[in-house]
Amino acid sequence: MKKSLLALALTASAAMPVAAEQFNFSNATTSDADTLVLFTHEKQDENVFSNYPFARQLNQAIAANEFSGKFATKLEVVAPQNSIYKRVMVIGLGDDNSLTQSELTKLGGKLSGMLEQKYIQNIAVDASSFASSDLAQLAHGINLRAYRFDKYQKEKREEKAFTFISTNANTAKQEYAHLANIEKGVFLARDLISEVATEMTPVDFANEAKKLKKIGVEVSVLTPKEIKELGMGALEAVGRGSNEGSRLVVAHYKGSDDAPIALVGKGITFDSGGYSIKTGSSIARMKSDMAGAAAALGTVKALALNEAKVNVVAVMGMAANMVSESSVAPGDVVRTAAGHSVEILNTDAEGRLVLSDALWYARTQFKPQVMVDIATLTGSKVRAVGNRYAAVFSDDDSLVESLTVAGKQVNENLWRLPLGYKDMLKSPIADFANIGSGGPGATTAATFLQQFVGDTKWAHIDIAGNALASSAKNEVPKGGTGYSVRLLTQWVENQTK
Image (cartoon, rainbow, N blue to C red):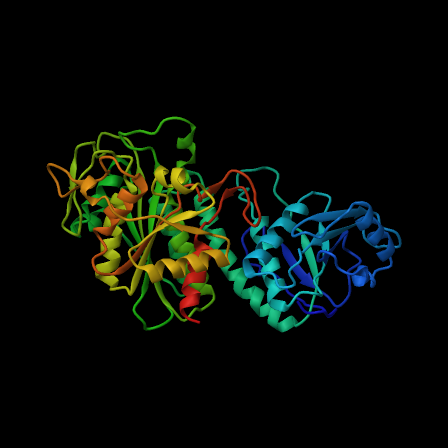
């Protein structure tokens, strides 16, 4: 990290979603700030704070509290002597002089959480030891954590104002602007996931997708009639029990003439389970069963805003899996657009049905170089790897490696699980059953999807357990996470470097 005390002026876009912080910079510490944030490494020389009149008091507090400076630890001094600030926070950076991209984002998130108290509104951050790219990542983490979906709350979260002291103003401004656009993609996904199901139907989702036309994204929506005419019987069947029926939403950003990268998202706007109805409190969280589609759309938005030199198309199968007299019933057989017949043994295994036709459409209509589908697909995935990892399935080792590397860069980690057990998908009356007769559920679900990808390079990412956070942690707030927007954006960007 570089040592300097120049100033950087950077202002977040006015188009930022609600809950974005205000990032302003000046060439001197502001008298408006109520809190000063300083950083220190483990065993760092006490002269590091010598620019401040309260340095001696600060060093005494560090010694008295045995503050080690370990990563993301905090020491707070209230009303420091001879200071314009009401409080000073010293944040530990650990013993490494070069924090990674993921660590800096995580640090920003943790710092945002530390500053969440209402009485802290204006913060000066002495980031003079940070390189411009490091500061951009720190600010990125702060803003990611600050997000709130407070549409239905009377008391709204107030924005906080940050003043950063740093170097290389123009470079840092450009680098954060790039990350701010990724935040907009993440926040779109979080908004879609967090919205109540009655206000986020397949038609509502399609309308949100159409807003991306303003940034150069081609958006098309197939109606139930068009879906049926194309032979997408699986997608049509899942939405049959709702008034609106199903939709296929396509968002295409053509930033290059290369063969496209296809992102295929599961978009169940509410999952009752159908006739295999869900029970217990978990059903209240089923508005998030469209998180895969939200992530695909958010990724396209991020890439389009950054004018990435890439051809990417999101294909999102949308439906509400409801119970009515027209709902598909257990034991029914549907025919997919790929020509396979599927016996529906469990109507709560609907995501793979929606994805089967969406994968077919992406493959046949766009001839992609690679397809990645994203879905909150199975509870089995949660039992296998929990919610600290998403599960990735593919028979292409290099694709798994590139996705895994991208996930590590942005703190959205993947764990590979095997494909196989196709024999357990046998049906006496159809080509496949939609659930396996035993075996690992996440794997049999992924293997079912594999039957619809043809020879196209493909990976399946199961984000069950990752779409909603029960509590805030690092750069992720409580609620909808937008999981895999950052992962997929990083992965796509890595392909162009």
